[in-house]
Image (cartoon, one colour):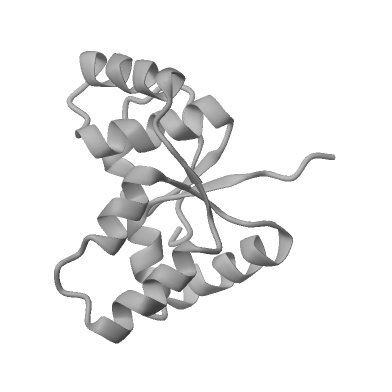
Length: 128
């Protein structure tokens, strides 16, 4: 029996750091079983937020250090290009979706609408 691997979207990291109960339970379960997975775009979005306090930024950086961060390689880039050509998906969302598809990850996000029309992408919304 294989373990489901998840790719965590930026909004889930934000909910986690704000203490969302739905996300914190999920996060604890995922981290207890394995490192969690992120797209490099999620790392940039999450750590690049201009309103982090110094202390908050350091805590967020420590959280990111627990993750497997996936860079954009040629395969992910090609998948993202196809997603952009077929739909009105934003660039960051296309890269995140492509990262999930290429690596057979289930995407954890509350922003399900951002990914509508992405065929083959499995999504888990912890708020449902």
